[in-house]
Image (tube, rainbow, N blue to C red; front, side, top):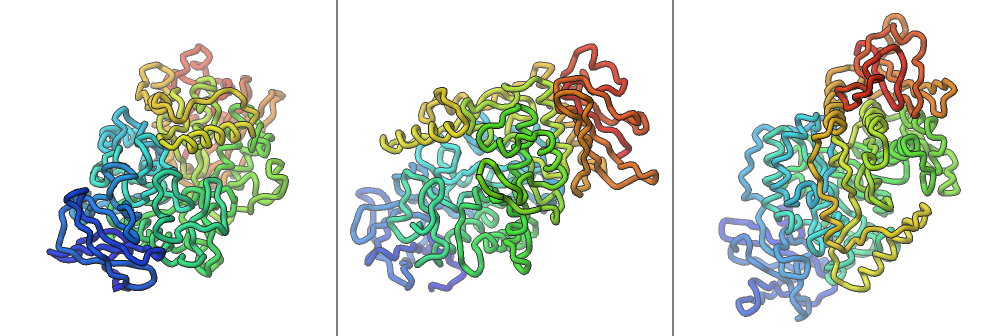
Length: 614
């Protein structure tokens, strides 16, 4: 039975009309009992060892929702590490869930091509007041109208309590109960596909959360050989690693096969350590692509990594890479952030050149591409120009960059309206795949602070101390919002309010820019842009960005000019040679000043314009 491909490596599965298979990996146990039901009604059924630390039991078919657990060597009942449902939380019994019974209505959904992705990152628990999978559905038409083609859910694996960013999950197969559980997640993906929206999921394969984690009780899922920023790493290359690798691959497969996700974001992939001849990252990509192909569609795998090693992550396996589909680009954010805010503390010191760093990111993807990094005190990164821009996700805000600030403040709370509009232009006019953070499109001012709902006093204090230490690297000494207060989560719930001219205008600007990305061939061209910094004697220069192939007269199809500072600045003398397609500082986008009504070749503070024919 150990090599039967029809039986998953862990958890219950319906294998015939009248049978259920149960399997668990517990190499540390001499005896394992399957516990069906709760308390007095519970039945203890001995499981059979079938080799390599696995135990198995066949039973008559059980009904979905039945509670079950495992006893190791006669000990207390433990939830299943491979549980697909934890309706009563991390410290309670698991529940049977058969994903194949869901009635999908998505029709001939085939996914979204990589080059057409416009991703919208959202946190289910704060996206709506209800904080559930079902509540997300009602907002999808508004995002589609904006021009979003894919939503990306922050992690949804079961975590302790009801409030968490999601990166402290301890049951990676079980969608969070307070969000609605597994069937509600299937309903969300199904509804999105019916409407024409792709859905991505952020997954964590580098660590487990600190509260409610039963994995170490069952087997060598973790290793002391490597350390992550959050504790021991998953064991991908040590003794017993075959079962750990199989668990992770089955998890990646599950999200595509059973929940029909269109892709995965691998959180902190640089913290996934594996010296095996075939790296686990490339195997994840294979599994995801294969599962999607079986559904007759495409799926994408993107890596978040701090290494700036595009060749290592994106090249084919034959050429020494992991063959991922895309790579998050923190350097783009950091360069834009310095331009917009002037902050150069912490890791922003590497981007202190500001406009020059932003121009380099437009042209060469990474700012740190092998040069010296003052923040690290060493060289960092590798060149990335061998890859087209649609292999890189760019953003000016995301959960990390907002939430890990002292006040967890967004640009709309920090910058002028014109600078917020400039941030939209910097992102959406770059030859990259854009990612928006929820609420960014209308200038949400509510913060997105870190929050969680742990119960252990020592853990609570350790997290409070850790947050203070992290902020000290930036020289931030003020008090931070208490991560454990329910009010901290409530403060982060989106307002969904855009009645003011500035918010209405910003939303319209995002809509128009995303429309132009679809309509203009030059903005759909992911060749790396050509740039020039124009200095008119002002404190900040104008960034000229040339997009698209050259016209017969040698001119580019599009010229984009971004005024990176607070001064009125001149355009080059030949600005009238190409038609004006868009300018950001007009009434339509929220600027109601008299200066905004004039167009005489001057750039208003933080204004950007698009000139050309497309």
